[in-house]
Image: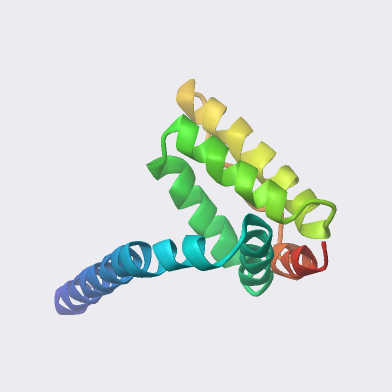
Length: 135
């Protein structure tokens, strides 16, 4: 069992390094091109398409991780961008419900009284996210 645990830890560490490298290159190389070659409207539409193809479980995991890693100002900017990209869609409704439950969960955790971050608003997030491309 100990050997399996060590192999799993090594595999997780390798995935983390690959992901961090991937994201760093994406931000350094692709993001400037994205901003240079697409208008704000086009960027919003593309973000909507990306969100629309991402399942709810992945979105929940990613957003929970970002909530913990970002400053309050960065969180506000991120959620604002997502709201703008998904305005008047089912995804926007899912996002508001999920984000509100996460905020409530974070306040409970901060008070030392409860469980960590709500989440669980569902599997429809990915399907609802698809509606972001229609907005």
